[in-house]
Length: 103
Image 1 (tube, rainbow, N blue to C red):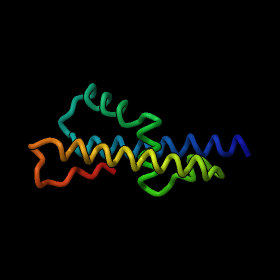
Image 2: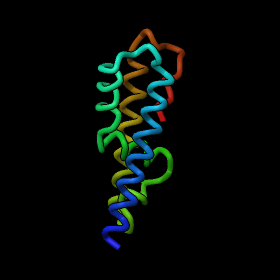
Image 3: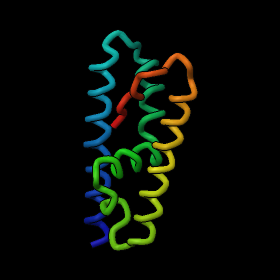
Image 4: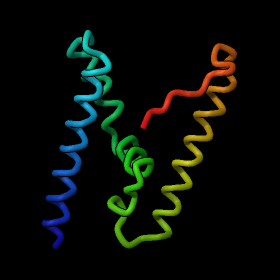
């Protein structure tokens, strides 16, 4: 069962990497290879991927069977979202505009 989960984890990560890289390319068609590589490094960190999974409603795939850890992960994502919103609203250039929806 351990090898099966590991294989699923690896396949899931690669599928997510492909999807995110395709989205990056569509949003930044004129970006250089180096630019896309830098964006990929920022977006493909374990923390960023965990955030995406939680925002998409898939946290139990990250931590199967651990409700306390899942609750903590959800609270962390909620704090990150609140921090992002406060930072957005504090910038006078953003007055009256909604922050971008990242996920």
